[in-house]
Length: 295
Image 1 (cartoon, rainbow, N blue to C red):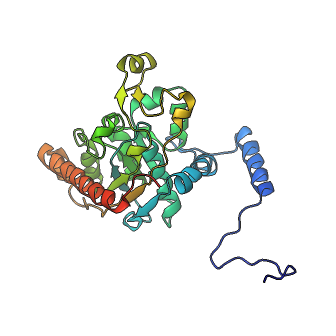
Image 2 (cartoon, rainbow, N blue to C red; image 1 turned 180 degrees about the horizontal axis):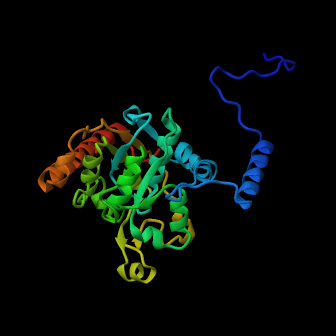
């Protein structure tokens, strides 16, 4: 029987929740600083304060509670210096990119930021493009990727692009074409390790049953998806299904002293195919490990 006069103690390793009043004060201070222009962005427009204190805080309930993300292989990402993360892409909306970005910051001991390479249509969208830049995204070009790697950043690329996010549910976890391997050539030129990233869970968040090309053209989108909840349920269709997620950071592929191979199309293709096959095989293993798609 507990003693009402004894203060409750925390278990070892537990973290006391931050009082609501403290969170509110912190938010007000953050808003005051930003309204006065007292914040920094880098040459690409990345705003670490906004990303860590606003975006990541908003994503954590989704990451921890809704998807219950489990991460393996985070030790394969270096504590410092560059790395190129190459992942499979799916799920209609690029939630997989955001979950990997949060995983790298929250689970890695060095709290590393992932600099995503995004398609040009992202930056043409009102508000979305500007916010993507503030989160560290930049145009998916070899030049920008090389500049980031040369200054020691972690860069993330999803070579399937919209072919991956827009594929039908019947093709789930089947990797689409990896483009022309530009990411491999960039890694080779800079001697950057390539880390395959395999993501299970995103396919079930917004399962695509069909597409309406006319509406996609009208809104300037690569596709206009039909899912079990959208557009039938309207705004409620934007709520992702609570799938169970697994993210694996694979063993790095060393590219040290291989710069001369960057201009050899066959070598670039073979290495890109090796990365793709590694991700595909890991996806099969993770699917067996996960079992049920939903919690």
